[in-house]
Length: 610
Image (cartoon, rainbow, N blue to C red; front, side, top):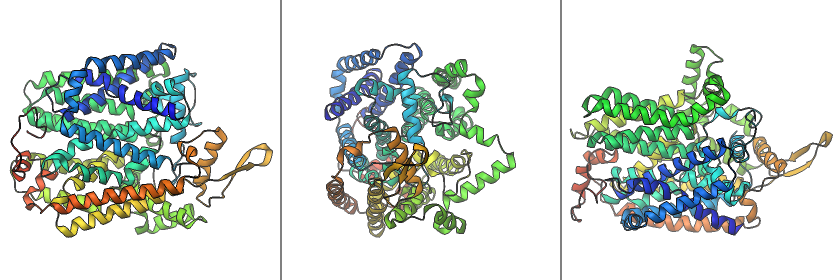
């Protein structure tokens, strides 16, 4: 296992950077921007190459050839790569990613079954989809007994197939691949942290610490689905869009929409973000663009061309009805009237904003679904259905309230220079909060923040962390206390529950049944049975008997991290209220005015210079 794991890490490092950096290395961008562009482009290269191997029925040895090409491109870029790693911010960001990767691997080592709320099925479906591409299965294959291939976009499954073809198709290795790909979202988070912070560097320790204490991030990193990987492209697209808008840069603006197209190939939850940016571009930004018609033509051509790599093939193989109508959002919405869809969207909006303990029907439903013998399991599901699905508390126990406070300060900022950014962010948060919930076509009693709103949530987490030293001391203490609560109730408690095991016993007619020896919810038992009946080995199964030392190590590491966060957070002396514009990524001039201790750098060297 360890040999395969090390080989997998080397493949992930080479293939997720090599081809993309070769293409992006000469861009006149800052080194952190180049790193994000390299990651996004590399995943696209792996997607296209894997799709070609699948469509042409090439042998699996072709995947090794693609990896060799990635290594060759990395070698050809060695001089530029040395310059990239010579940049201090890039080194710090890579170090922060490495810490968060090891942190997430430690948590994954506790996972012996998936559970939490009523979540089920997706972790099976995406593995089956990956094997579909790996094994060239028949086109009428039905995943988890419900969905044909066009119901989900294929990018992440094809990229995962690239790695599994070379290291083995075991589920534990598949978990590591998805964890790595989902965790890449932290790189564009580091980018926007630099713009949000009122002084240089983005307070990377605070940002990494806040992400390490985020139940939303850690649960979705270790759960093998594709929403966070789609969020990587969303946050990167927003960064490129705003930079392209401010700097009149047609390349960044075009790549912003191409990036959104790539996100749509990962998960259709990117749709609301793509719609917002497209409308904002056409209504607000378009009239101020130089050579705007040429830019619009490039955006349309490259974005549609990228989407066509999947949609054209699917239409040719499955037909237009299956391609465009088999997604659950389309199928569920088409079953009821427009008025019923409107009522459903309003109900979901209320359920996503107001946590279940504060709604009578929410309390009744929770008791009906999640009464269980284990008091720890009961508490885990109780907090899980607050942290994962509620829009405010997905940012943390106090993070959501502090993010709203920051947005309020930004709205009240008197700076004329930040008015355009203030209006953008106000519209972005308001419209995406509504449309991101309304886009889900199923009625949900608990909330839907985990479907389309994960990028919005993580940007809020970064906003609070990056600007923490500018808060009044009492609010800083409150925020740091909230991180401790989130780690205890949203992370440690959750992964402790996922470490508990059940028992598989013979049932009537020779079928196997799950004996709920863990005392958790019935849905937890269903997920355990799905794993055991299939004979899949989880990453956590390799660490049987080590749960207590692993948890103790995690607590110790978090305590050390919290100590560093306290020192950095309490070192700030606060800034005037008007500086809240920096918290929304608006005025970079205000950010430089705060930090007078460092010499001015060139535009190429300083990624935060407008």
